[in-house]
Length: 398
Ligand code: GLN
Image (tube, rainbow, N blue to C red; front, side, top):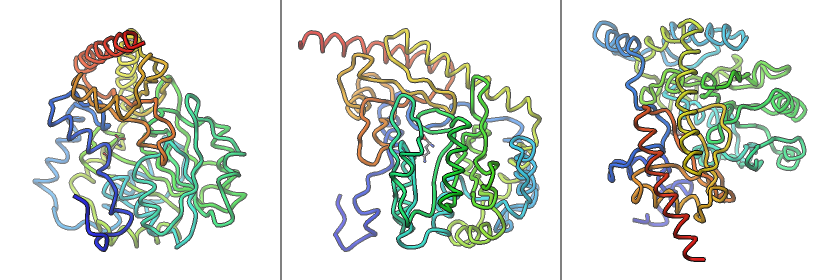
């Protein structure tokens, strides 16, 4: 149903439902295996679930402090000191209802009408509407597969005199890349040269593989005072429904971020915050074990898909791999392929064009591997059958 032209903000009026919700809904309707929206199919770490349940029964369920419970603010600061060499005070950490709220709050708090925000495509689908709703103008740097490299020339070309922010994701959903140290150094230099504030969505920071480690842009020279670092317990602890996130920034920025947060969600359920605080204090090897588990799942999906004739792009982070349809002999666009496989093969996936503002890349499809082995194996079998039929059909048509 289309809304009357006078009703609703133009940003939302003609906007479709997010592709993640759309594909999950299609998977629920059809009973397809859902390799679309990124979430694990396991229940999550039992100890954290128990802590949250205990806290729900034995501790307060009333409003916690607006910026988060003190235990969690301190735990985030400690965690980043141990894992990423950052020295943050708890006062520089604000707890949000998920990273999406943190991104929204950062943009609403900092962007002034007409300010330009530099973004790198492929980009998460919330970024552009949130920038527009905050009154900003997105300046897009298009990165191209399979390497998705960032160059100074591309940054220079996209940024203008009104550019005041860089909004970026690293490690990157959907490409599964982790920015290399020289790329990060270049971004930091660019932010310093142009006096930009960087809003860094680093929700995938712990989910890196093959020994590759994430480095926070905030830790680079000149960036400590000009970076908002955003993280998410949902990704770190495989509890995507908890919606516990945070944003970290120097006090002058953090005060502004808090102003936006107080009128978005105000607070986040305290029992979940206490459980996450304990989770962040887990020893290093807990995070290594998580990584190893997801790396094995990635390898299982990549190996299976390759054996089935699919060409898979390298992924060293997140819960996602991308398959290249054209290189796999499948003459379909990503959206056609995803629409067909959910009905015909019983597998839901995400078209990469959803991560570009202009659908300029239409040959890649994202698959989520944070699933049980048996689920991945069944999905591989179904996609193998679908590919074999598609390739045979296009041979006959020729
Ligand atoms: N981050 C998740 C993904 O990329 C989606 C989150 C959501 O649906 N809002 O799949």
